[in-house]
Amino acid sequence: MNLINAATTPSIAVIMPVWNGREYIGEAIDSLLNQTLLPAQVIVIDDGSTDGTLALLEEYASKHPQVQPVRAAHGGVSAARNKGLSLVSSDYVYFMDADDVVAPELFADFARVWRDRPDLELFGFSARKFNNAPLAQRQYEGTHPRHLSGELNGGAALLSKLIARGSAHRVLWTSIISKALIDRINSPFLPIQNHEDAPFMFGVYTQARQAFFTSSAYYLKRVVDTSLSISTRDFSWVKNYFIARENTDNALRQHPVANVDRELVDGYYAALMGGCLIEIRKNRMDVPREYDEKINRLARQMTRNNLKLRLLWRYYPLYSGLLYCKRLLRGQRHPG
Image 1 (tube, rainbow, N blue to C red):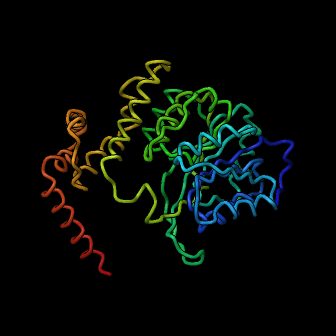
Image 2: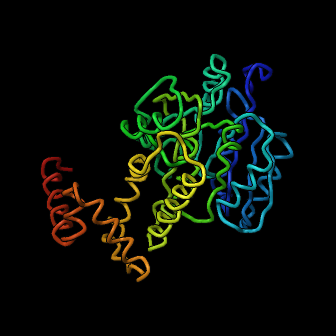
Image 3: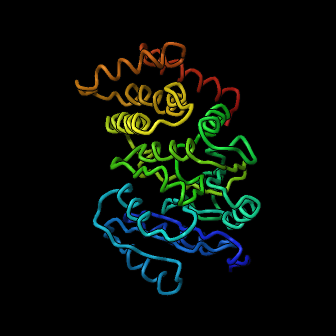
């Protein structure tokens, strides 16, 4: 039930891509329809599903005018999000995954912050993750925390502060973003399966004029073994980092942003840069010849002042053996 006067609040559009997600999407949509402040639009892009997802969406749409199902040919999550953005007529945009849920007070709490800051362009918050189990059996733990709170000016200083606090999320689902800011950064989602949101969020952080952050966790992330983010990775995971990073570098060359330099971009992408080396070694990836120099250059940069990464990259069997011993010792200290 909508408990807040919509006339005094900003309108919010939710964009949710889905592909063969009938099993979970009902719970995701219900969490939006159970908000104490309803979103104006729930734009669900059915990315060519074959499991009856579209029929379920049409059933929701027949009962709830906010739900707008859109049928599309299977083109991937980025194409779906770009399509969703073209249909937004609301003041703010929230991107959500189709197998997750949001806390019922998310949009109402955002609106309360907005009332004192009607020029707000970015509202950031934390998340929790839960095991894929029936509601009564779920266990929750923190993920993607925001270690800062309050109003902040945007730009390079904002991103620098977020990086320093471990709060510069490259994911979409811990931010509500103004449509005006999205139009201003003009950064369509890249046609890749990993890291496609990283260049977009870089633009959001560095070009937002006013932001507000809270450590409150509103997003509940379902851990599903088949999700793209945790499934077995091949070299495309690494390749997509280079595509995303090149997109950011090219955007900055074409449209420089005040006080944004290579060091700041490196800081933003640092976790992915180190992750590339980890994934190559952990999954014994074959590096294509055309990427040899890029990977060697990345390895020199990331291992120069990082002993852990240097050990992992140069002596992986030793590194994995030490990790195994550490787990054994931890198990002895904490017997089951």
